[in-house]
Length: 428
Image (cartoon, rainbow, N blue to C red; front, side, top):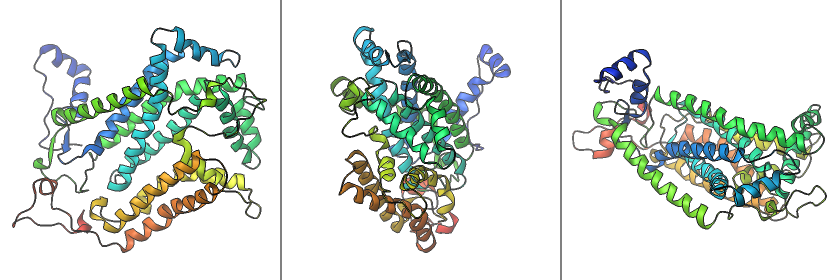
């Protein structure tokens, strides 16, 4: 984002001048996160979650590298190497519990970040590419988390890998060969564990690359804001440093405190007890369930129980599970309202909160047993989920009468007066 009032980087020290001429890294940092990057002055704490996601990614990479130093991707010893890391390696318990709970924290932050985007219309022009890259990051996170869940090689790791990879077998013609290619055989074993470990180690660095693109795409139009009104004057912005660095710093401190409470006092609260039993292909757990952050999509998968003409229920469930995320790619074009922020869209705001409740229902049903009434509730919740994005949002954007928008971000922050003018919604 380039504004005429943005501060320019002007090094004063001879060495920094020499560096700036040959490798303008200080200039890049200053223009990206320093005083040279103007940011809307009205960002609330929901905008801190993007920075928190970056902190989570850093924690996962650092702790993951340390864990990889002591892990052996072999079905005979994989479970024991995890236990050895926790019990015998200096600070190994801290690395393991930070990595395991960090994955959950990462998804909490990302889910809040995504739903903030839903409410404030962060996917709308000119930030479509920012949104699309964010969805790609989420898909990569899902793949990385699934493969990481397999690595401890406990009961739920083994049977989770068997169930999830078995879904590919539902794809006509290429499903079974694809499943065997993923596993390196007919069932999860050494080949599968080695492949999952390699990809689990590689994908976080792919995520880093997409995050760089995500931030780059964000800096072209600049950050959105709670009003959805674009920056007009210098008074609408403040420098990212020191104002939002301080605000992000406070949020990071609060986040790390909560994570420390989880790691030190409830390190296994979000784990499944069966995963502390070594994998046994001859003993099926009573209730196979993935990690909690997969539950809404797992509920959608299980919502399909009857074949539809020539389409098997399993195939429809697989398509719906992936479609539940892929539909987000089309959201910038499904929502044609000229107003971005849900704060000025009263009808959209009501249905947004219905979506939040619907998502919580899917979370609960995904972790419950595959029995009634949870299956029926999952079916109703999945039906509303797709209806929200494919039917309700387009209709609302066509019939809704938004509230009048403030003329500028400054007016929204400081209030209007007799001379203030409200811009029409169509000019947002």
